[in-house]
Length: 249
Image 1: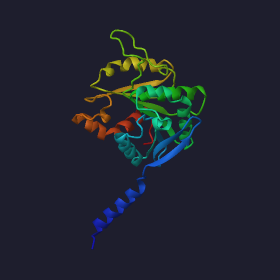
Image 2: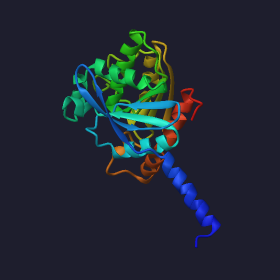
Image 3: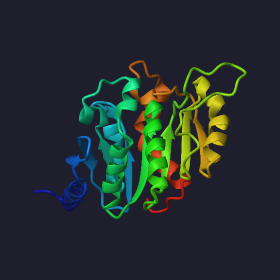
Image 4: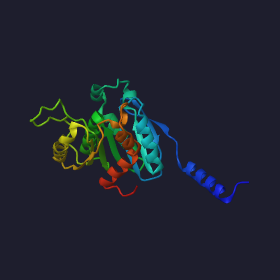
């Protein structure tokens, strides 16, 4: 027979399992394409909407999304490349219509939750482009955006010259959190990027993650520090949400 402590532990495990909701697939029909969205449901009032251009192959991101959902943060991950049958190259971003992205934002807001946008690398251009159009059309605002190691230069920066950014930079009024790796030269451009984003009224906070490179959670040659930060990425995102003014997680 099981003793009381074993029975109690078993009951707690069952309750925990009941509260952990599995990933579900949601299809959103837009004018240009049907977009498959990986949804990690949660009962909280915060929804994190990411735009991973990864053909549905983001392993570390899915683990982070599951962890966030267990902590009450719902996560939506639209497969933008799959929806338009585009190859995983940076030039594909230009072929993703802004209207498709804003249609997904509209669908997320229908949940009644506070929607935060998140993206990494060149995909951050999608977030800013969509947010700019969304604000211009005077919709219900999104709550903020997390840009992880953003890659927003139009061309390779020339040392000693002011860099030129993609057109979407400096056209939103979102609260924005910038995260950059401490082991990448891009960290030295954070202040310049912050200033450009603030020109239109965005409240920008920037943080450097020590001892990691950009794309640290996608690297095959990740070092120990990068492995640790990858395992703690859900906590990093929750801290970022706190900086953006979120107090409900």
